Length: 190
Length: 190
Figure 1 (cartoon, chains in turn yellow, blue):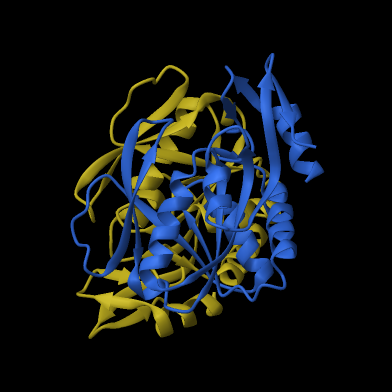
Figure 2 (cartoon, one colour; figure 1 turned 120 degrees about the horizontal axis):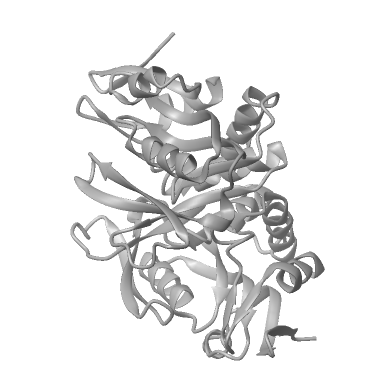
């Protein structure tokens, strides 16, 4: 998606060889017009897939996910992150390890909001090692819901997340695919 | 806002005399069309106020805030919640006590994303005791930004938050104002 790639080139900050900071338009300060355009693009990519619900994880997934859900005319659900689990009976839960923060969070979805047979589209801001998406897959599995595909804003193709999802046969659509960071510049997959 | 009041009446769950659960359309499962309509209504209410930026707190404020910012054609910033503070030099921070969860979180905004002289609209999902809004006011003050007003999705008028903001002379616009909960029913302010 050219609009997003241009934004990454112009406003993203590369740190070392693995980290891209996009906190000025995606995950701290947010560009609403870009979020709306991304939501429409995800909706276009999955428009023939009879999506029943969009699922993401708080907080950075919420903005792209809510515009995707708006364009698909379906509800959006965001999984909650918790450090510790107390009441679990009413919830589906999964563990998500963050390589960036080097900590494990639990993600939680109330059982009322994901049901057997529902066709789910997962949305997330980054695909790197795939931990958050794997957590959402576990929750969908536990609910008996079907994950139709995964929509990613920024994919770092050189980390293992995409390969894990490819192996599972899950369709992944990424709006920007990064091949590498070289000399502080972002190299996109052509 | 009638659309929101109807949604609260039909889908909100009253627990005891103080708690309203709206996790099926606002803060866990999200109704995107309702969020879009709320964003347009906040934008209409503040359309003549030359807003430069919309500020909210993760996670439940993000959806209404991003649609408000879209309609006002300005960026949105969401403050991050943290249990503990490590690097603070680059950030504005404030303490926010949650009466519901009985815990204190720090909220954090990167200094790059709020500037002296900016005209800020605060958005939040609930106004109860006013702690989150007070935290955002502290951050705006520290940055030398001006808070033009506060947009609230659901105001519980019987708790102290509104009185605190009225005393400070801050304009508050709430899309639904709740007078009381009686026998499990929501009584709105007329």
